[in-house]
Length: 261
Image 1 (tube, one colour):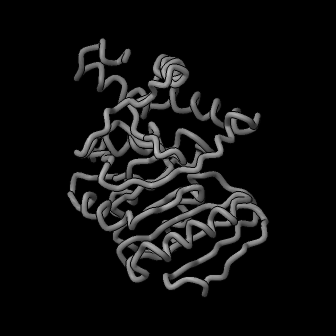
Image 2: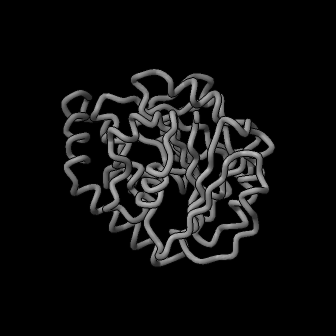
Image 3: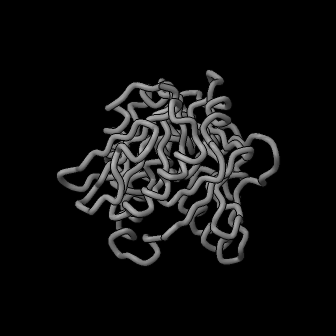
């Protein structure tokens, strides 16, 4: 099976249903198997037999974090490629064939599509290694409407990390990294994994030939619990050996001034 797709629902079954219909409408059924993890008890508005592709629904007995859910899905089935995406993603085309082609290079550890919002504007899903200073500067740039770290054109982009909105991995690379670090319940697990892939010699790629729509809810902006997860995950990452290994490598390889941009 070429690609195993993991989607986690946390009271988002209606969004998952729309995404599954997008798979049905745009993707070849023999090219994918989808695992939907229901992270908390909710009514599911679809059945596995509603779709032509293979679909497995897993019900958690208690809520688990982003990392743990996707790691568990990866272990359930063998595949050439492993893809995870948020329930609030909508497709206008088959994203998998082109992304898998890009990921077939032996040096590639992760490929992501271009992410657009409801207004078709490009989201800043491809980013530079975060530091406390860069996070502060990022909030200022976002307020000014200048939050994209990498100019987007027609060619491949090689960012330092991509947001865990839509990620496609060669399964061998994901397995080599032992997946996500489950110490991160939510947030920064994507930064951590991208950093570890890069330290292992893999490339992170954003392929602008493929785009998807992100109908983001921005829960961390409005919910205190999400804000706390974001804060504590940031503290964990900035105190980790992974962050310091990447940061010190940048200090050795680049003009120090570039670390402040």
